[in-house]
Amino acid sequence: MRRLLLVPLAWMLAGCPVDFQGWGGMKQQPKALPYRENTFFADERAMRQPPAGTVPRDRRGKDRFFLTGRDTPDGGYVETIPLTLTTERVESGQRSFDIYCATCHGVLGDGVAQVARNMGLREPPSLVDLPAYPDGYYYDVMTQGYGLMPSYADKLTPEQRWAVVAYVRALQASQRARLEDVPPEARPQLEKEGTP
Image (tube, rainbow, N blue to C red):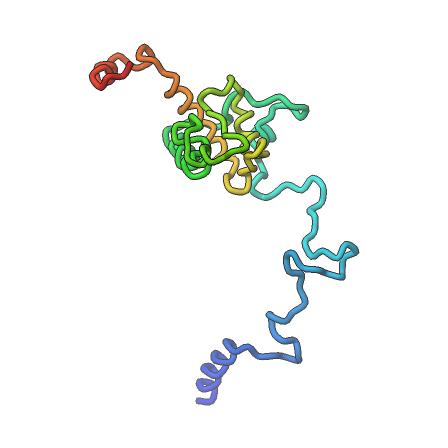
C-alpha cells in the first residue's frame, strides 16, 4: 500500500521545480545564450563561428552546382536547372514567386507592382525583358541578392529557388509567346478571345 502512495507523490514531485542541491534546476544552469556575452571565450561572444569548411546537414550529398548556381569556382553560371522539371515543381515555384517576388517584380514578372511604383530610388526590373541570362544567374541573384534586392537564401531552400527559376522561365515564355507557338487545337479559343 505504501508503494502505491509513493507513485502519485513521485509523479507530483517530478513536475515541480525542485532545487536539488542548490542548482536552481534547468532554468538556472550555466549555458551560453545566443547574442549574449560569454566571458569563457576570448572574443566574449556566445555564438561561435563554425569551423572553415563546415557544411550544414541539409547540404550533404548535394553538388556545388545545385547549391551555388555556378558550374566553375571562378564564375560561370549553370546553363540549365539541375532538377527534373514537373508541373508540381513549376507550380511550387509559382507559389514562392507570388509570395516573395511578385510584390516587387509584379505578378506577371513585368515589373508592374505597387511596391515597384513606390520605389523612388530604382524600380525592380521586368524579369520578362531581361537579356538571356543562364538559369544559374537567376538562382545566384536569389541566393546572394543584387542591388537593392536582398538575399532570399534564408527564406527559400535551394529546391525552392530552382523552382522559382523554372517559374520565371515559364513566365518569360508565356509573355513572349506568339499565336504560332500555341498548339493548333488551342488557337481557335485564343482567336475568339481576341488575342493578337
